[in-house]
Image (cartoon, rainbow, N blue to C red):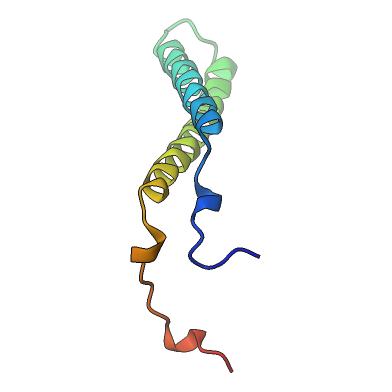
Amino acid sequence: MHSQRDLSQYVLNPDELREKKKELLRLGGTRDQIVKALKSAILKPDQREQFKKALSLYDTKIRKLRDQLIASDLLGNLNPDEVNIPTHYQDRKR
């Protein structure tokens, strides 16, 4: 079991970090193409609806990946010895 102060389990290793960044760039490019296609006047209504659904899914994936990268960066720069999380009165042992 990991200790409470072991933050290294949440930090991505360099290979994972590189893959996540590539994935973020790929998803961003695809999202941009969908937005560009939605601006087109020749889309049929059912195609437009599919693109709108896909756009929200891509936004969710991009947001999740971006949050993972930011969290990994922040936790990688954090010194576990300097972290002081006070215990709440409801967290006491009974």
